[in-house]
Image 1 (cartoon, rainbow, N blue to C red):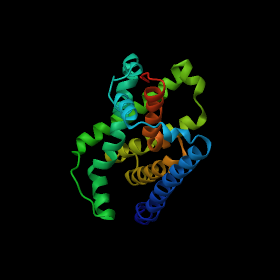
Image 2: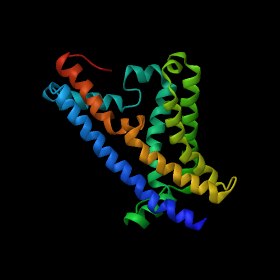
Image 3: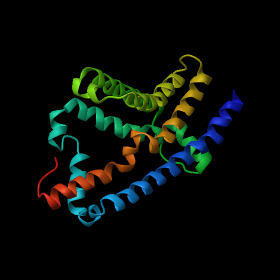
Image 4: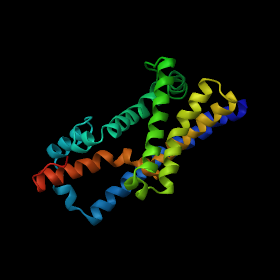
Length: 219
């Protein structure tokens, strides 16, 4: 088992990081080239003022009409996205790995708090899954890949919780936790998780079009 652990935290981890960084750069370059070729006028009316105005409204909880009309979805969405970054980065065991492989060390979350926050991420994923089943308008547009992506996101946190509490086989859960985390990292540029690469740019584009061209709000 020790050799498997060394493999997943060594070569396999570098493969995941390479796919994430390389895939992200390729996706961004392809998107830039596509926009330049098919709709170059986009760059001419991109407005920093209206783009930032739109971004700030959409990243403010309850800052838009849609956020205010769906309070449960708003709380789950904002909590999920914040914790999706906070937990993996600041968890003690992860900071140890950051220090081991990159020489980076910083403040960590107390283990008990990290455990609670990981459970909150799993709860948010359950909420999103239930919403896809129960809401007809969401169920209609849900495809198999949506479930795959949801599973990719929830598994690192679920297996991490099981490993931390030593539920089932600890060594197996630890390996599955690491591998599932690496799968999520590698999947970002190639799945709908890529909205973390394009989300702000898309919002800036919409804000510029509505504010600078249509002279209207997009929220």
